[in-house]
Amino acid sequence: MPMPESAPVAVIDLDAETAREPVSEDRSTPDPSSRGLWRYAAVALASAVLAAAVTFWGVQRWLTPEAADPIRDSAELARVMEDELSAELGAEPELMVTLGVDGVRSSLEVIPAGRYRVGLLCGVLNVYGDAPERVEVYIPMAESPGFLMPCPSTLVWAEEEPSYTEDTAMELSVDDPEGFGAYVVHIVFMAVDA
Image (tube, rainbow, N blue to C red):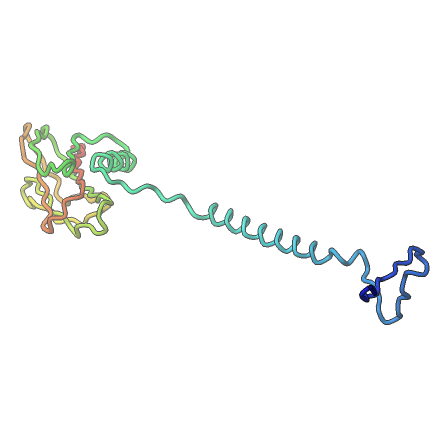
């Protein structure tokens, strides 16, 4: 039986000198130092982008102050406002009445005898997106028993300086015509030297 013809088998010459094909002049081998150059360029570019992003983030964080948590409790708002008042007044008021905390809208107070400047400060809770445009504060005084004041506000002084010859009991109250309800009003009585 004759053997089937098979494909010719390649012969490998182990002699290195004769096994190598001559390199033609038009085909040049790439320089081994330039093979990984694109990798270095890609790493350098990625490093530069990362450094720029971290620098931008750091500068942004440094220049932008931390946002304070909004005050959502009327008692906390009252404490913050008291600190502001103490810093602004520089002295203890003769009497300070806080209205609006926990829904308290009026207070019966005894005003000691003397002459006073009356100051008002209104603050708004950040619970809702909007706030009352103004609140009405009622203080029994001769000329102007009611004050329609913006809210929130800075410290506002009444033009009238009430004078009492004896200790006087009076009701101080606040009303929000819009029914908003999330505000705190401080009423301060500062003694005026006669």
